[in-house]
Length: 112
Length: 112
Image (cartoon, rainbow over all chains, first blue to last red; front, side):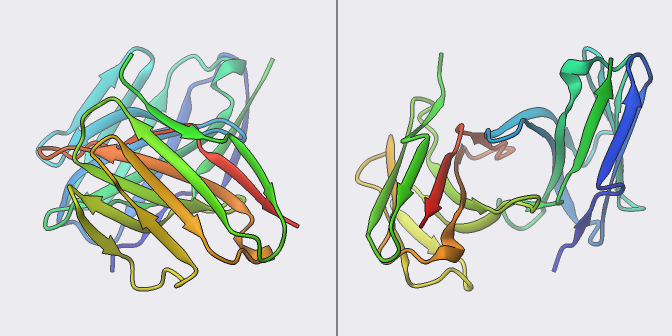
């Protein structure tokens, strides 16, 4: 069974600092990995989807890397802003299914 | 804009009183999912539809039922809610290919 872990559970940084969020998974037989953002009391917003054949994916200030063989993905957020404060979840899709396995998320606070 | 819509956004119900949550989508995706998310936890998949085919997760309580009358709509019925069913309920959709999931804003259910 796929286990997805996100450490740390919470992170607080001053505005302007770069954020580094980690995601690890136990089974490397994945098809893709999605990073989501969740604001308090809201649904999930897809940030980036990275295919297993890709090493990284970029969107604006966001960059996600994937090391499938070691079971790791990292989400980088450059020059953080208070509006980046949210919970960030990663989820992996296995090769033989279309259901996602989620991590519990990292809650980020960016201090002005 | 194509999207996933959930109604109501907030629902309070009494212990044992049936409740129905609804989800609609304009993405024309053939897969729809229902998740339960409790505070500070990862979303937990309850069931999903692939077209009309219903797929129940093994640990989803019998108290939870679902209906999908057409491609656009999906309902979650909780027949006799317990206090432990207080949670955020998330609907998501995806389509064949990369199965990237798109989430609605969620319904926050409180059972009193």
